Amino acid sequence: MFQRVLIANRGVIARRIVRALNSLGIESVVVYSEADQGAPYLAEATQAIALKGVSAAESYLNVDVLEGVIRKTGADAVHPGYGFLAENAGFARRVAACGARFIGPAPDLIEQMGDKVCARQLAVEHNFPCHAGSALIASQDEALTEAARIGYPVMVKPAAGGGGIGMQVADSDASLRQAFSRAGVMAERAFGSAAVYLERWIENPRHIEVQVLGDGKDAMHLYERECSVQRRHQKVIEESPAPGIDRAELEPVLNRARQFSADIGYDSVGTIETLRGADGAYGFLEMNTRIQVEHGVTEMVTGVDLVSAQIALAAGLGLPKTKPLVGHALEVRVYAEDSRTLMPSTGQLSCFRPPQLHGVRVETGMAQGQFVTQHYDPMLAKLISVGHTREMAIGRALVACRAFEIRGVNTNLALLQKILTDPVFIAGNIDTGYLDRLLAKT
Image (cartoon, rainbow, N blue to C red):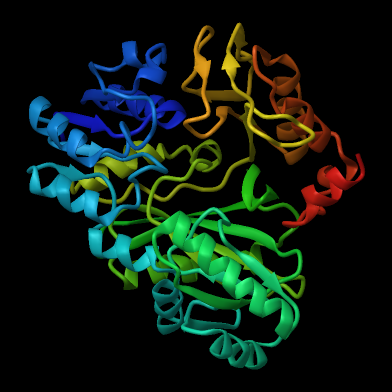
């Protein structure tokens, strides 16, 4: 096992990793920018090292500086968390060049899965179902030809993308010409590559993802998560198991995800995301080669510590034991943003009192007195509730949202409560268009 791990991240996930390392008896080294000086996990870690600057580019994305910290502290492993450098194969290779272990999959796997066209092709080759799509599109004329083959509506997607950035829907030749140009420009700006491809547009699908773990030879799954409550293609609420879907329908998808992970030699924690159409057909969306924001949902219904398992896999200690799915868990993401406009909110947290309730787990990297800046993701906390039934988990999440005291910034707590009390959500009648329809009513 490792002796000292550098955490190349911040906020909620940095604190979560510190907790896992402390439980394993491993020293933790956290880095922090000038904006994160008051973060609570700085005192919880073995060592905290200040980074110059406030922006992500100056601090958490500065590979040269992070490499210096690895060498200075003698860290024998680096945990990238999620976001920032978590799926950066170049950074993984730099970590290895320092003599440390990158806590994540092999760099080649990161690159393959980061290229969405390559990932789709691998899925096809290994018999994982995919909705109709194309290879890379080089021109508008090629896009029109491929759209005629696939059938409208289609989505233009950046090959190197993520988080819904740059995706454009087209339902005709005219709209496809415009979408192709816009998507290329946005992809170049966001990801440094204008490469795009087409996928069949699935109207209001359900977003179902499978938690997988691999040791390079074998793989396992830890069931599914329902992630359909989204805004701007960003998840707001996740839960497990997926409501209203029979286990007999899900089992083949779970097993295919496990087999696919084993076939490609996957060697870490990861997630295979799918879209389920109204006809019940599942199609590969992408594979995330990192710990997910919503990993706590799976932990609550299986009892498996996924962060500790990820560290153990990196240390060559093998897969954890398979656990049964017990109860129901639900996670709501608390953001510093306006509940109506969904625009980020900044300011000082004059009051920040997370609830302490039975059946509710709070994950946060913030503390009262800290400033919420425009430089990072506006997530303040995650509330993860668990119960014997979905109704119990929803009720506990609702109570937790009402009990969470936050002043100094606007939050989405009112929106979360609106969702949790909505009869449509409670009935489980959700898809990726659900939240837009709910917001349109207000």
